[in-house]
Length: 350
Ligand code: 2P0
Image: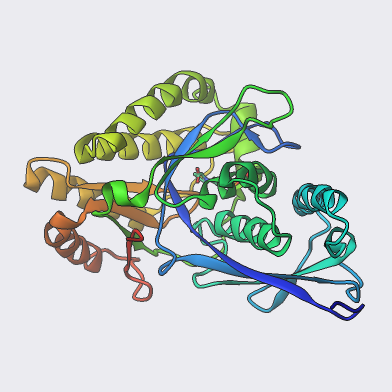
């Protein structure tokens, strides 16, 4: 039995994903639709994740979100779009089954916690909005597929759509004007290639200087390299990357990952005014990986950098010693390399 003070709740987690083919650029800022498709690897829940409890009650006075104990504004268009979509799906369920409590009419409270520094270029918004959508969908007992929920999470933060799945995930940019086919699909589950590892070198946990949203809009508006990247380079890479993943071809995976990170940071530099996300320590990590691969005589490690200086290094677990040993040595000798957060070694879920 329910009363006006009944509180309904559900808890969900979503891991961080790290793109190997980068999302950078929007065709619509309102719909959060991208100029190019992207592809990522979802990290283990045990390593970097957001955990969110969604609750609702007739007694709640307003919608609210608390992240790591601080209140966050949910009046923005992105949070509101997610709330509206999820409530509409719940409302349809209630219309079909009048015995259900009218949760769609209640205000929502979201309590969220990250187990990693927020806004440090570690894709906190991706895990955040994915957990936000997943928790409310669970609270509302929605049966929508992860792909359908990804359509909603995309409106919160683009990269969040990819965190609805584990394993290897593509965000297909879609061709519809309403954005409804701009969704995530799983290319392969984590079990397909469970020996892949990611080492995250946290060079700085400071909040990034240029937000992704404003940075990508500036790039789209001013970079002359960007149209070639979005329409020619990335579409070809998406196909090659899917093939490399299906075939568990680490060398091709590594080549494409490094090339796409460099292409993304090149269009950032080509933006007016230029955007610098990588720093001297980031470049030292690049040189260390290049040297590791040269010594191995093949590509055993791949670096990638997001909208911040932190390095993510992908490798196959069989090469752990030849990758992490020299990487630790090289970074220990680098001026400006931080003592804290030196390495978070992550594994994909089993
Ligand atoms: C990615 N990044 O594919 C790329 C690589 C950063 C560099 O997705 O404006 O926070 O919320 O849609 O998703 C960061 O962009 O941007 C991002 P919004 P988001 O992971």
